[in-house]
Amino acid sequence: MTACALRSLLRFLHATGIAERDLADAVPRVARWRLSGLPKALAAEQVQALRAACDPADLAGRRDLAVIACLHRLGLRCGEAAALRLEDIDWQAGTVTVRGKGNRTDRLPLPDVGEALVAYLTRARPATTARSVFVTAKAPVTGLGRSGISCIVGRAAKRAGLGTVHAHRLRHTTATATLNAGASLAEVAQLMRHAGPAATFVYAKTDQRRLGALARPWPAAGNTR
Image 1 (spheres, rainbow, N blue to C red):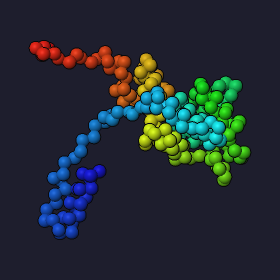
Image 2: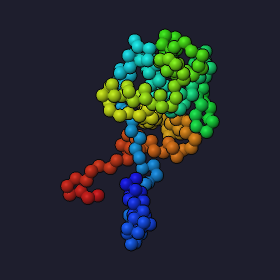
Image 3: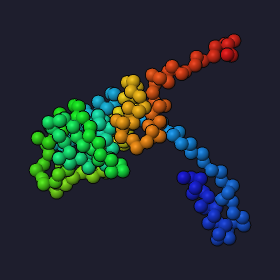
Image 4: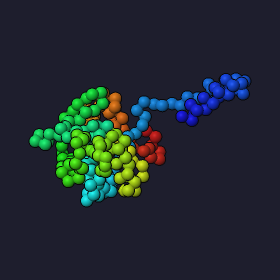
């Protein structure tokens, strides 16, 4: 962004006659390699601290615990968690219907997430006609949006002393932990509901177990092979 701003300034100086020559092309392009980033997963103790920062005795705390459980255990995006409706949960089958990107619909199993949802829906969710699973804790009671879901994680992270933590890091945590536990990239892609394999390839760089087998020993003195 700094390079882009500098080029814009140089073009402005040339267009207004302050600079005799257009020097914008003198600013080199910044290389941005595809899949060069590294997903930032949370450690197990950090996830536990995030949960511990939510008070289960408080109505909003129970809601926040259920939100964090859905984001972490199911790998939901903020928009997917916000879009959950009461009729999407099939308690008899133990599944939840998730509406994701590109109008994609998936049915996922409810592991221990179900317990957190039951605690919230039966003892903490305000009485409202809204069909959204997650709603505001105070009146006027309406369904939480994407930003509201994200803010829940951000506030819990600050209370836990973790600094700035965005909700999507819980999704990265789920994918990374699943891959490190021995799952294949195809299985992670299915869990994360990726539209294509390219979105999953970046997690290959976090597979510590398999990457360890590729690591070569550091050359010792006198050994250059």
